[in-house]
Length: 242
Image 1 (spheres, rainbow, N blue to C red):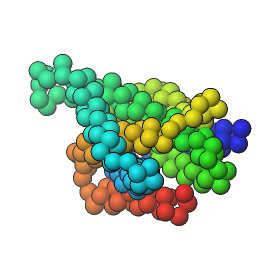
Image 2: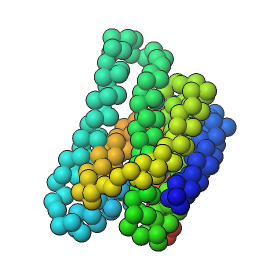
Image 3: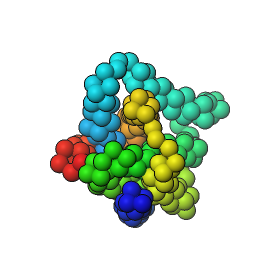
């Protein structure tokens, strides 16, 4: 049950990140700039290196995880544009709300958090030392997971109350993910495909959804620096904590 207890620690970390975003929602553009950097860092310094390492260890082609990455990227693009399609005839400069996009984004991050918990559980199936290292890394960056979830909900005009509901879902997701690994084991090849798919999801959310919005009305050097700091944080976490 050690993996489950460690995954439970992510609950507090995620909640703190989300509550920080709610408290400072008047500075959402800066939070979004930071969030975009974090998501870029997760893809570049966490998911992709893990994919390449597994591909090398398994002596398999990198084509399949890259197909999964493109599928994840285009999958969210299709979901987002399908939701917004019926608004295409509305006035070009109207202030329209699309809370469904925020929900879809938050659900993608909840899915990622669930699989973070799965990752903790599976790491302990390999070795306790590996499991503890993975758990520390997940706990360290789950603060930003909570921040990301709330930011995406607020960005797309959802209410703070609804944002909190999804924040709680994101905080609980790793716990249920770790619990699920008591029932199954995942093949290394399956893990490679999962990592590729969610790398594509997160890359789209960060580059096409969050970063443009962060600079849409409040572009500044401080926002740019926060994006760089977000990516730098994940680099430090993955190199010196994981």
